Length: 107
Image 1 (tube, one colour):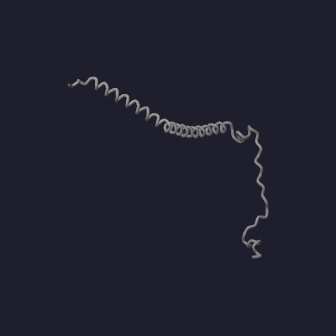
Image 2: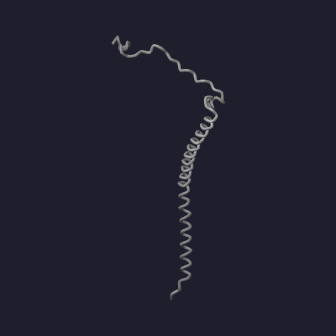
Image 3: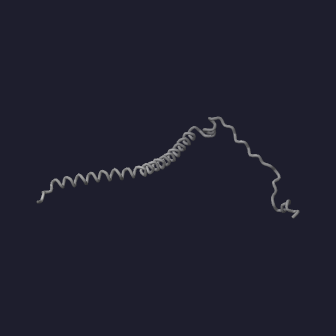
């Protein structure tokens, strides 16, 4: 086991240390648009980016609104059931009372 520190002959060994290149420092204007694009290309790129943002934003807003509606419906459902039950009871009682008044009295 004295040979444990020496790797086998066919295993590649790192002989150089590589440092990643630092990212280029860009001014705010350079970061927005590369200078290699013509004004027409820049306009087209801006249009496409805005279309992508619009589609993504619309989808995410639809999902968020749907989730909010679902949550509110779940919290409102018990209250709605109680209110519907109350209205139905009142309506039935009122209808029964009206029918009872109209029935002829038997002796």
